Image (cartoon, rainbow, N blue to C red; front, side, top):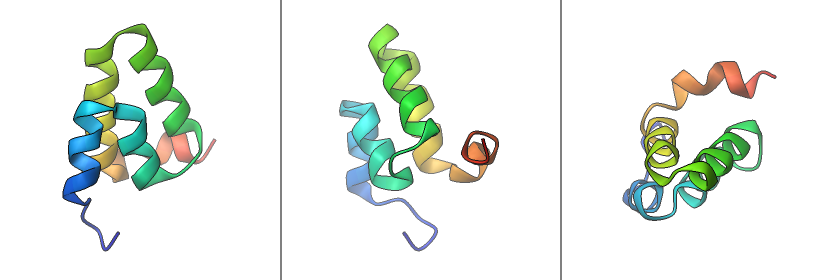
Amino acid sequence: MNGRPSVLAIILAVILPPIGVWMVEGIGLVLLVSLILTCLAYVPGMVFSLVAVLRPDLMNGLRNR
């Protein structure tokens, strides 16, 4: 995505957190964590998704597993 997330991905990370993560990361462990956190409680899922969308470099530990 050219190093910057799209506005749509950011908006979806707030409204539907797993969809925003899917747009940036695709299907993988980061999406699974986002989905689980969103199902358990919306706010932690939203926060995790915003971090995954806005700072994808912080997700390297999850991506490499």
